[in-house]
Length: 381
Image 1 (cartoon, rainbow, N blue to C red):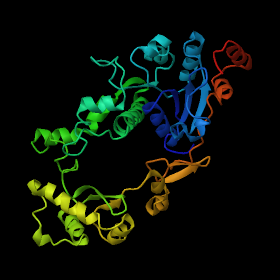
Image 2: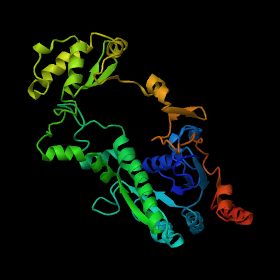
Image 3: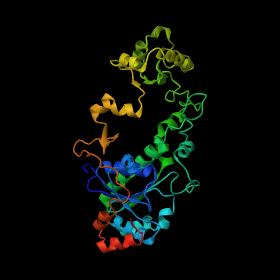
Image 4: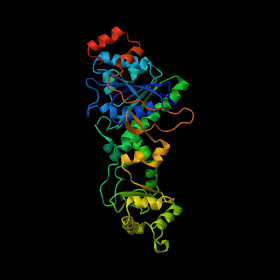
């Protein structure tokens, strides 16, 4: 793979959600990512899952029985020639398997050891099970998302698993690699989804502390409380998104909707926002999505149609930027961000579980007889 991380080698211990996402980001940027799959059978799911498992693209895959001490030794031999390892076990599990930080850093003192958990490596919740929604709940993020008078709304699993989890881990790995390049020493990264979500919530904690953010959900400027920052239904049952915060964009919005600004309350009169939301909703319901897109085409009013994932791939802006690509016939986001001098290449298709076991072990110094013996003992597939 081409990209700014070309020449870096990462061992990824297979997991769910954030760790594969971090592995995808690192692989997209040119790192050689070796995924250690579990035995037997690899990833469960729908038939031929590996072809459509976008998060697994760009890897080489080995299957190792991590519950076998010989399997742990296989991982440690891979670690000896790696720059980083990433794993998503609960605290203490990697240590019990014999591939914890102490064992790995003993083999490779310059190794960056990235640990991804929901709650972190210590604290009252550290050993409890959890998923994205739980981490959102504990940080105040979930409480803050939803309509006035309604319950909190789960924002898919984008915020904790991927933004506050996998992306945080990938960022931590790259930071530690930069430092290791100066010091020659590795270190352990404690990446917790609750910490990542809290970081994403920083401006909202600040606004609350300053008295500029109400705990009454759906009444603030950015949480659907404002009539100029929200989603409206169109005549054909589709939706549009408007985010006309600045006065000039708001004026353009009002004019395009055919409303007389002289008959309206001041934009920032929050007491009148519910009334204005009803007025804008009535106007937007008079035309179809296509008609509103035509009306706003030449207007700078922070307007956008709400597209389905399939439509998003085909939108002219996405096409012009080549924001999506096809890997083995499967449409998916192209690597991001973009680099002027060391651009990322086309991602390779996701591997079949264990597809590269032989070649990866051979590159790590295992002989053919070593590999045959490990296979015979059920240590690798």
